[in-house]
Length: 113
Image (cartoon, rainbow, N blue to C red; front, side, top):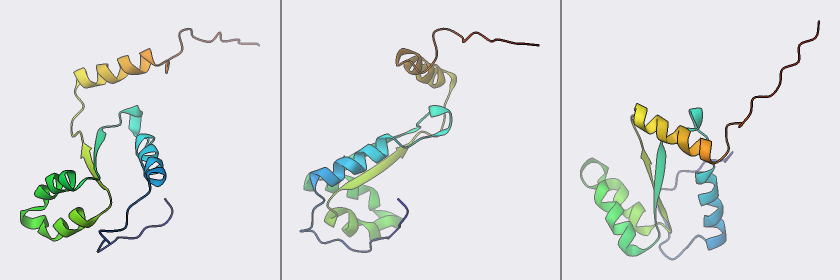
């Protein structure tokens, strides 16, 4: 994560190992966001059919990316929520309450003078 390289071409025969890609997925799942909102989800394609479906999104202005999508070992499509209305925020808070993020009891405050 401290090193960046923008690949311009991929070897269609070179594949990311399952173990390495499991590590990538774990990093994606654990990516933090403000107020624990995680306003994203990911679509991952590693099959030829899946990559072809994602490549359809490169038509038009982004056509230069089609070959990259089709030749890559895995493709991760980042999808982001652009709004967080009251209903969604209540859903997030409800899930966090169920998973124990919030304390069930407030700690006692001891003030000495």
